[in-house]
Image (tube, rainbow, N blue to C red; front, side, top):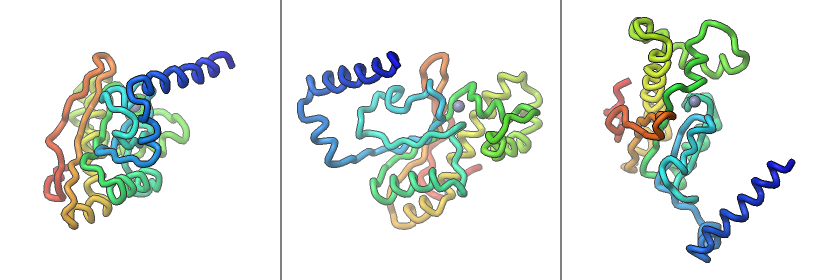
Length: 203
Ligand code: ZN
């Protein structure tokens, strides 16, 4: 319980520090949000979207799940994407994975983990499609390579949704970015050029 009290105290200190710089910050932010970015990332506690990109509240719309998966039967991610694209009119969708992802590692392992195996089915089939390349690597390197392939695959899934197809059709400018974060350095690298239209999808 004491730890939770600490969180609430942290919250007050944080709010006060923001107000010290801009007394109207929360008042202004409470009436509207106008983020330019949608972040689709992993739930991993070590990959917090705002902190690693240096963005303030109001600047990035965020969806996170285990292993940053975008699947067309998941109403959660679709609802987030539709709101971000159609209402908030974000200009950039960032799919950001991370090396050493536990979800991706679980997808490569040959034993049952529980319900999560169903969630990871798409990554398991991605691993099967790239079996030859992955089999030639040691386990940790194979996990990291599959983390990269997963980001590229999920970015392509975003591009193939009716949400993006319709937005591009109407002439809305949105770029989809494939990024990966390294836990051991705190640095993000870009895996591929941005996808700016249906013709840019390579996976
Ligand atoms: Zn992860």
